[in-house]
Length: 113
Image (cartoon, rainbow, N blue to C red; front, side, top):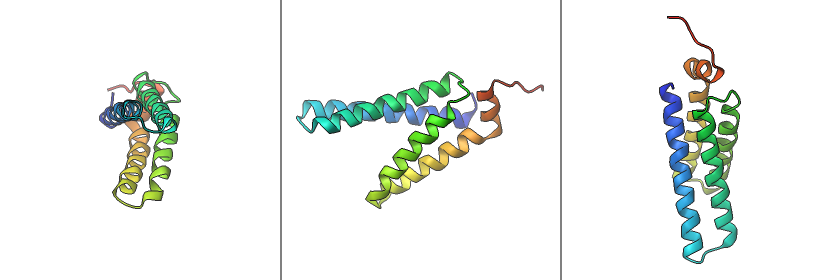
């Protein structure tokens, strides 16, 4: 697996873990049930993106683009550091999935050496 994709999988796995912890916190601390459901859906979405990238699915970049775009759009209303993080995640995913080595690896093509 090319390094940019490896880092992308690590980031989405970490996001999945953080959203899972946020879900547990909302359920245990007695917070909003709607927020807990949102965090649970985001945890599953992040895990599915990470697993699809690891599984070398040819369609794997598209859910990664969609989820990174959703996180970037959600962070735009906050106008702060989180906006920079959301936009940086979107830029990273776009770059990492479009590097030639990543496209070749996801497409299943092998290059002769």
